[in-house]
Length: 366
Ligand code: ATP
Image (cartoon, rainbow, N blue to C red; front, side):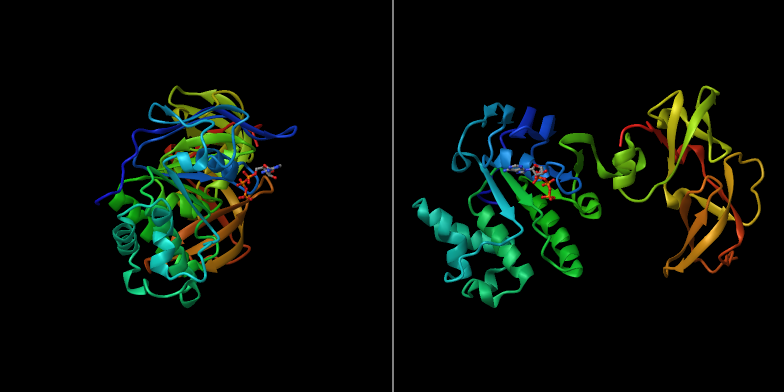
Protein backbone atom coordinates (compact mmCIF):
# COMPACT_ATOMS: atom_id res chain seq x y z
CA UNK A 1 0.00 0.00 0.00
CA UNK A 2 1.26 3.47 -0.91
CA UNK A 3 3.47 5.25 1.54
CA UNK A 4 3.93 2.49 4.08
CA UNK A 5 7.55 1.57 4.58
CA UNK A 6 8.97 -1.87 4.89
CA UNK A 7 11.59 -2.05 7.59
CA UNK A 8 15.17 -1.69 6.34
CA UNK A 9 15.99 -4.97 7.97
CA UNK A 10 15.31 -7.22 10.91
CA UNK A 11 14.90 -5.67 14.33
CA UNK A 12 17.64 -6.99 16.59
CA UNK A 13 18.22 -6.86 20.31
CA UNK A 14 21.79 -7.77 21.17
CA UNK A 15 22.57 -8.81 24.77
CA UNK A 16 20.01 -6.34 26.09
CA UNK A 17 19.67 -5.92 29.84
CA UNK A 18 17.50 -3.48 31.76
CA UNK A 19 17.91 -3.01 35.49
CA UNK A 20 15.91 -0.79 37.80
CA UNK A 21 18.17 -0.32 40.81
CA UNK A 22 19.27 -3.83 41.77
CA UNK A 23 16.25 -5.46 40.08
CA UNK A 24 16.87 -6.89 36.60
CA UNK A 25 13.67 -6.66 34.57
CA UNK A 26 15.22 -7.84 31.28
CA UNK A 27 18.23 -10.09 31.56
CA UNK A 28 20.67 -10.28 28.67
CA UNK A 29 18.26 -11.11 25.86
CA UNK A 30 19.05 -11.64 22.21
CA UNK A 31 16.21 -11.35 19.78
CA UNK A 32 15.82 -11.13 16.03
CA UNK A 33 12.48 -10.08 14.60
CA UNK A 34 12.32 -10.76 10.86
CA UNK A 35 11.44 -7.72 8.78
CA UNK A 36 7.76 -7.61 7.86
CA UNK A 37 6.72 -10.29 10.32
CA UNK A 38 4.08 -10.35 13.03
CA UNK A 39 5.98 -11.07 16.21
CA UNK A 40 4.47 -11.64 19.67
CA UNK A 41 6.16 -11.23 23.03
CA UNK A 42 4.17 -13.46 25.32
CA UNK A 43 4.52 -14.01 29.04
CA UNK A 44 2.96 -13.55 32.46
CA UNK A 45 2.61 -10.22 34.20
CA UNK A 46 5.96 -8.78 35.26
CA UNK A 47 8.14 -10.94 32.98
CA UNK A 48 9.62 -7.93 31.18
CA UNK A 49 7.57 -7.69 27.97
CA UNK A 50 6.65 -4.04 28.25
CA UNK A 51 10.15 -3.05 29.33
CA UNK A 52 11.51 -4.81 26.23
CA UNK A 53 9.01 -2.99 24.03
CA UNK A 54 9.81 0.36 25.66
CA UNK A 55 13.50 -0.16 24.88
CA UNK A 56 12.61 -0.69 21.22
CA UNK A 57 10.50 2.49 21.30
CA UNK A 58 13.28 4.45 23.02
CA UNK A 59 11.11 5.16 26.07
CA UNK A 60 13.67 3.28 28.19
CA UNK A 61 17.39 2.99 27.57
CA UNK A 62 19.01 -0.43 28.05
CA UNK A 63 21.44 -0.76 30.93
CA UNK A 64 23.56 -2.85 28.53
CA UNK A 65 23.27 -4.08 24.94
CA UNK A 66 22.12 -2.67 21.62
CA UNK A 67 18.88 -2.21 19.66
CA UNK A 68 19.20 -2.19 15.86
CA UNK A 69 17.06 -2.14 12.73
CA UNK A 70 19.11 -3.65 9.93
CA UNK A 71 22.57 -2.12 10.39
CA UNK A 72 21.29 1.06 12.05
CA UNK A 73 22.05 1.21 15.76
CA UNK A 74 19.13 2.89 17.53
CA UNK A 75 20.53 2.56 21.04
CA UNK A 76 20.61 5.93 22.73
CA UNK A 77 18.44 7.68 20.13
CA UNK A 78 15.26 9.44 21.23
CA UNK A 79 11.79 7.98 20.59
CA UNK A 80 10.90 10.53 17.88
CA UNK A 81 14.17 9.80 16.07
CA UNK A 82 13.24 6.14 15.63
CA UNK A 83 11.14 4.73 12.77
CA UNK A 84 8.95 3.14 15.43
CA UNK A 85 5.44 3.91 16.74
CA UNK A 86 3.50 2.42 19.62
CA UNK A 87 -0.19 1.65 20.12
CA UNK A 88 -1.15 1.38 23.78
CA UNK A 89 -4.15 -0.18 25.47
CA UNK A 90 -5.40 3.28 26.44
CA UNK A 91 -6.33 4.97 23.19
CA UNK A 92 -5.11 8.42 24.32
CA UNK A 93 -7.11 10.25 21.63
CA UNK A 94 -7.63 14.02 21.90
CA UNK A 95 -11.29 14.34 22.97
CA UNK A 96 -11.87 17.79 21.46
CA UNK A 97 -10.53 16.89 17.99
CA UNK A 98 -12.39 15.02 15.25
CA UNK A 99 -11.15 11.59 14.27
CA UNK A 100 -9.68 13.06 11.08
CA UNK A 101 -7.76 15.71 13.07
CA UNK A 102 -6.64 13.19 15.67
CA UNK A 103 -5.04 11.09 12.94
CA UNK A 104 -3.59 14.09 11.04
CA UNK A 105 -2.22 15.63 14.25
CA UNK A 106 1.30 14.11 14.11
CA UNK A 107 1.99 14.81 10.41
CA UNK A 108 0.56 18.36 10.74
CA UNK A 109 2.81 19.09 13.68
CA UNK A 110 5.75 18.00 11.56
CA UNK A 111 4.44 20.39 8.87
CA UNK A 112 3.96 17.49 6.45
CA UNK A 113 2.16 18.94 3.42
CA UNK A 114 0.56 15.54 2.77
CA UNK A 115 -0.89 15.32 6.28
CA UNK A 116 -4.52 15.26 5.12
CA UNK A 117 -3.95 12.63 2.43
CA UNK A 118 -1.96 10.48 4.81
CA UNK A 119 -4.64 10.69 7.48
CA UNK A 120 -7.33 9.72 4.95
CA UNK A 121 -5.24 6.78 3.81
CA UNK A 122 -4.64 5.56 7.38
CA UNK A 123 -8.34 5.87 8.22
CA UNK A 124 -9.24 3.89 5.13
CA UNK A 125 -6.81 1.17 6.12
CA UNK A 126 -8.52 0.71 9.49
CA UNK A 127 -11.98 1.07 7.85
CA UNK A 128 -12.93 4.22 9.76
CA UNK A 129 -13.37 6.67 6.87
CA UNK A 130 -17.09 7.06 7.52
CA UNK A 131 -16.41 8.21 11.09
CA UNK A 132 -13.79 10.84 10.20
CA UNK A 133 -15.98 13.79 11.24
CA UNK A 134 -16.92 12.39 14.68
CA UNK A 135 -15.33 13.05 18.06
CA UNK A 136 -13.78 10.15 20.04
CA UNK A 137 -16.64 10.08 22.59
CA UNK A 138 -19.03 9.25 19.72
CA UNK A 139 -17.19 5.99 18.96
CA UNK A 140 -17.18 2.56 20.60
CA UNK A 141 -14.06 1.20 22.31
CA UNK A 142 -13.20 -0.98 19.32
CA UNK A 143 -13.60 1.96 16.94
CA UNK A 144 -11.40 4.15 19.14
CA UNK A 145 -8.77 1.43 19.09
CA UNK A 146 -8.84 1.46 15.27
CA UNK A 147 -8.31 5.23 15.34
CA UNK A 148 -5.37 4.81 17.73
CA UNK A 149 -3.94 2.34 15.22
CA UNK A 150 -4.45 4.78 12.34
CA UNK A 151 -2.71 7.48 14.39
CA UNK A 152 0.36 5.28 14.72
CA UNK A 153 0.30 4.08 11.09
CA UNK A 154 -0.02 7.61 9.70
CA UNK A 155 3.61 8.21 10.69
CA UNK A 156 4.66 5.40 8.36
CA UNK A 157 6.86 3.64 10.92
CA UNK A 158 9.03 0.71 9.94
CA UNK A 159 8.14 -1.09 13.14
CA UNK A 160 4.80 -0.87 14.92
CA UNK A 161 4.70 -1.78 18.60
CA UNK A 162 1.44 -2.93 20.14
CA UNK A 163 1.31 -3.01 23.93
CA UNK A 164 -1.71 -5.13 24.96
CA UNK A 165 -3.78 -3.07 22.49
CA UNK A 166 -6.87 -5.26 22.79
CA UNK A 167 -6.82 -5.57 26.57
CA UNK A 168 -9.75 -3.23 27.16
CA UNK A 169 -12.09 -4.86 24.63
CA UNK A 170 -14.69 -7.53 25.32
CA UNK A 171 -13.99 -11.03 24.06
CA UNK A 172 -16.03 -10.89 20.84
CA UNK A 173 -14.54 -7.56 19.78
CA UNK A 174 -11.13 -8.78 20.77
CA UNK A 175 -11.44 -11.73 18.38
CA UNK A 176 -12.61 -9.40 15.59
CA UNK A 177 -9.71 -7.02 16.16
CA UNK A 178 -7.21 -9.90 16.18
CA UNK A 179 -8.29 -10.75 12.64
CA UNK A 180 -8.25 -7.05 11.69
CA UNK A 181 -4.75 -6.46 13.03
CA UNK A 182 -3.46 -9.46 11.12
CA UNK A 183 -5.15 -8.19 7.93
CA UNK A 184 -3.67 -4.72 8.36
CA UNK A 185 -0.19 -6.09 9.05
CA UNK A 186 -0.34 -8.25 5.92
CA UNK A 187 -1.61 -5.33 3.85
CA UNK A 188 1.04 -2.82 4.92
CA UNK A 189 3.89 -5.34 5.29
CA UNK A 190 5.37 -3.60 8.36
CA UNK A 191 7.06 -5.36 11.25
CA UNK A 192 4.52 -5.65 14.09
CA UNK A 193 5.59 -6.49 17.64
CA UNK A 194 2.68 -7.36 19.82
CA UNK A 195 2.95 -7.67 23.60
CA UNK A 196 0.36 -9.86 25.29
CA UNK A 197 -0.13 -12.22 28.21
CA UNK A 198 -2.93 -13.99 26.30
CA UNK A 199 -1.47 -17.15 24.78
CA UNK A 200 -4.41 -17.70 22.45
CA UNK A 201 -4.04 -14.17 21.09
CA UNK A 202 -0.32 -14.65 20.46
CA UNK A 203 -0.85 -18.02 18.80
CA UNK A 204 -3.66 -16.81 16.52
CA UNK A 205 -1.93 -13.70 15.28
CA UNK A 206 1.82 -14.09 15.29
CA UNK A 207 4.20 -15.68 12.78
CA UNK A 208 6.73 -15.98 15.57
CA UNK A 209 6.19 -16.02 19.32
CA UNK A 210 8.83 -15.38 21.98
CA UNK A 211 7.79 -16.70 25.38
CA UNK A 212 9.29 -14.60 28.19
CA UNK A 213 9.71 -15.56 31.81
CA UNK A 214 11.49 -13.59 34.53
CA UNK A 215 13.35 -11.35 32.11
CA UNK A 216 14.51 -14.22 29.86
CA UNK A 217 13.33 -15.56 26.51
CA UNK A 218 12.36 -19.15 27.28
CA UNK A 219 11.65 -20.19 23.71
CA UNK A 220 11.10 -18.58 20.35
CA UNK A 221 9.51 -19.99 17.22
CA UNK A 222 6.33 -20.40 15.19
CA UNK A 223 3.30 -20.90 17.49
CA UNK A 224 2.70 -24.48 16.31
CA UNK A 225 6.28 -25.42 17.14
CA UNK A 226 6.12 -23.96 20.65
CA UNK A 227 2.84 -25.73 21.33
CA UNK A 228 3.87 -29.04 19.82
CA UNK A 229 7.41 -29.20 21.15
CA UNK A 230 7.96 -27.04 24.20
CA UNK A 231 11.53 -27.00 25.40
CA UNK A 232 10.88 -26.05 29.01
CA UNK A 233 8.35 -26.84 31.68
CA UNK A 234 7.33 -23.19 31.73
CA UNK A 235 6.50 -23.11 28.01
CA UNK A 236 4.69 -26.47 28.22
CA UNK A 237 2.40 -25.10 30.91
CA UNK A 238 2.05 -21.53 29.67
CA UNK A 239 0.93 -22.41 26.12
CA UNK A 240 -2.29 -24.40 26.27
CA UNK A 241 -2.90 -27.31 28.60
CA UNK A 242 -0.46 -30.17 29.17
CA UNK A 243 -0.90 -33.48 30.98
CA UNK A 244 2.36 -33.99 32.78
CA UNK A 245 4.14 -36.37 35.10
CA UNK A 246 7.63 -36.48 36.53
CA UNK A 247 9.65 -39.64 35.90
CA UNK A 248 13.08 -41.10 35.37
CA UNK A 249 14.55 -42.24 32.08
CA UNK A 250 15.24 -45.95 32.51
CA UNK A 251 16.11 -47.19 29.10
CA UNK A 252 16.51 -46.24 25.47
CA UNK A 253 15.94 -48.30 22.38
CA UNK A 254 17.63 -45.84 20.07
CA UNK A 255 14.58 -44.03 18.79
CA UNK A 256 12.69 -43.92 22.08
CA UNK A 257 13.27 -43.13 25.71
CA UNK A 258 11.45 -45.32 28.16
CA UNK A 259 10.67 -43.57 31.41
CA UNK A 260 8.93 -44.62 34.55
CA UNK A 261 6.19 -42.04 34.91
CA UNK A 262 3.00 -42.36 36.92
CA UNK A 263 4.13 -45.82 38.01
CA UNK A 264 4.04 -47.01 34.45
CA UNK A 265 6.51 -47.26 31.56
CA UNK A 266 5.96 -44.54 28.99
CA UNK A 267 7.71 -43.99 25.70
CA UNK A 268 8.79 -40.67 24.23
CA UNK A 269 10.45 -40.32 20.84
CA UNK A 270 14.06 -39.47 21.75
CA UNK A 271 14.01 -36.59 19.27
CA UNK A 272 11.08 -35.05 21.18
CA UNK A 273 12.82 -35.00 24.53
CA UNK A 274 15.10 -32.25 25.79
CA UNK A 275 16.68 -34.66 28.27
CA UNK A 276 18.16 -38.04 27.35
CA UNK A 277 18.70 -39.45 30.84
CA UNK A 278 17.91 -38.86 34.50
CA UNK A 279 14.77 -37.01 35.54
CA UNK A 280 12.26 -35.96 32.93
CA UNK A 281 9.00 -34.10 32.94
CA UNK A 282 6.84 -36.08 30.55
CA UNK A 283 3.99 -34.25 28.81
CA UNK A 284 1.24 -34.86 26.32
CA UNK A 285 -1.49 -32.48 25.14
CA UNK A 286 -5.08 -33.42 26.07
CA UNK A 287 -6.22 -33.69 22.45
CA UNK A 288 -3.49 -36.27 21.76
CA UNK A 289 -4.76 -38.62 24.45
CA UNK A 290 -7.26 -41.35 23.58
CA UNK A 291 -9.67 -42.51 26.25
CA UNK A 292 -11.18 -46.01 26.29
CA UNK A 293 -12.89 -48.37 28.70
CA UNK A 294 -10.65 -51.32 27.89
CA UNK A 295 -6.88 -51.55 27.92
CA UNK A 296 -5.78 -51.16 24.30
CA UNK A 297 -3.79 -54.12 23.05
CA UNK A 298 -0.15 -53.89 22.07
CA UNK A 299 0.14 -50.12 22.48
CA UNK A 300 2.41 -50.04 25.51
CA UNK A 301 1.69 -46.46 26.47
CA UNK A 302 -1.33 -46.75 28.65
CA UNK A 303 -2.29 -45.61 32.09
CA UNK A 304 -5.36 -46.54 34.06
CA UNK A 305 -7.26 -43.76 35.78
CA UNK A 306 -10.65 -42.91 37.22
CA UNK A 307 -13.01 -40.35 35.67
CA UNK A 308 -13.54 -37.44 38.01
CA UNK A 309 -15.55 -35.05 35.85
CA UNK A 310 -17.42 -35.04 32.53
CA UNK A 311 -18.24 -31.79 30.67
CA UNK A 312 -20.23 -31.61 27.46
CA UNK A 313 -18.65 -28.93 25.22
CA UNK A 314 -20.76 -29.36 22.07
CA UNK A 315 -18.14 -30.47 19.53
CA UNK A 316 -16.45 -32.65 22.14
CA UNK A 317 -16.84 -34.03 25.63
CA UNK A 318 -14.10 -33.18 28.07
CA UNK A 319 -12.98 -35.59 30.79
CA UNK A 320 -10.89 -35.01 33.87
CA UNK A 321 -9.23 -38.26 34.93
CA UNK A 322 -7.51 -38.91 38.27
CA UNK A 323 -4.21 -40.69 37.66
CA UNK A 324 -2.41 -43.17 39.93
CA UNK A 325 0.29 -40.59 40.64
CA UNK A 326 -2.24 -38.26 42.25
CA UNK A 327 -2.36 -35.81 39.32
CA UNK A 328 -5.39 -35.14 37.15
CA UNK A 329 -5.24 -35.40 33.38
CA UNK A 330 -7.52 -33.89 30.81
CA UNK A 331 -8.65 -35.45 27.54
CA UNK A 332 -11.43 -35.15 24.97
CA UNK A 333 -13.73 -37.31 22.97
CA UNK A 334 -15.06 -35.85 19.72
CA UNK A 335 -18.86 -36.00 19.63
CA UNK A 336 -19.33 -37.90 16.40
CA UNK A 337 -22.42 -39.83 17.49
CA UNK A 338 -20.62 -43.07 16.60
CA UNK A 339 -20.27 -45.39 19.57
CA UNK A 340 -19.90 -42.71 22.27
CA UNK A 341 -18.25 -44.21 25.33
CA UNK A 342 -20.63 -42.38 27.61
CA UNK A 343 -18.39 -42.18 30.68
CA UNK A 344 -19.54 -41.21 34.14
CA UNK A 345 -17.60 -39.98 37.16
CA UNK A 346 -16.12 -42.98 38.97
CA UNK A 347 -15.66 -45.09 35.79
CA UNK A 348 -12.27 -46.71 35.27
CA UNK A 349 -10.65 -45.79 31.96
CA UNK A 350 -7.43 -46.32 30.02
CA UNK A 351 -5.60 -43.37 28.55
CA UNK A 352 -3.19 -43.93 25.65
CA UNK A 353 -1.10 -41.79 23.32
CA UNK A 354 1.36 -42.10 20.49
CA UNK A 355 5.01 -41.72 21.68
CA UNK A 356 5.48 -39.31 18.78
CA UNK A 357 3.00 -36.92 20.40
CA UNK A 358 4.56 -36.83 23.85
CA UNK A 359 7.41 -34.53 24.85
CA UNK A 360 10.04 -34.52 27.56
CA UNK A 361 11.48 -31.41 29.21
CA UNK A 362 13.84 -30.85 32.14
CA UNK A 363 12.13 -31.09 35.52
CA UNK A 364 14.07 -28.31 37.21
CA UNK A 365 13.50 -25.21 35.18
CA UNK A 366 10.30 -23.61 36.33
P1 ATP B 1 2.56 -6.65 32.51
O1 ATP B 1 1.95 -7.65 31.57
O2 ATP B 1 1.99 -6.73 33.90
O3 ATP B 1 2.62 -5.27 31.96
P2 ATP B 1 5.32 -7.03 31.77
O4 ATP B 1 5.77 -8.40 31.41
O5 ATP B 1 5.07 -6.09 30.67
O6 ATP B 1 4.08 -7.13 32.74
P3 ATP B 1 7.18 -5.08 32.72
O7 ATP B 1 6.20 -3.96 32.76
O8 ATP B 1 8.18 -5.10 31.65
O9 ATP B 1 6.43 -6.48 32.77
O10 ATP B 1 7.93 -5.13 34.14
C1 ATP B 1 8.91 -6.08 34.45
C2 ATP B 1 9.37 -5.88 35.85
O11 ATP B 1 10.10 -4.66 35.96
C3 ATP B 1 8.23 -5.79 36.86
O12 ATP B 1 8.59 -6.49 38.04
C4 ATP B 1 8.12 -4.30 37.14
O13 ATP B 1 7.66 -4.06 38.45
C5 ATP B 1 9.55 -3.83 36.96
N1 ATP B 1 9.60 -2.44 36.47
C6 ATP B 1 9.11 -1.98 35.30
N2 ATP B 1 9.35 -0.65 35.18
C7 ATP B 1 9.97 -0.26 36.32
C8 ATP B 1 10.48 1.00 36.80
N3 ATP B 1 10.38 2.11 36.07
N4 ATP B 1 11.06 1.00 38.02
C9 ATP B 1 11.19 -0.13 38.74
N5 ATP B 1 10.74 -1.35 38.34
C10 ATP B 1 10.14 -1.42 37.15
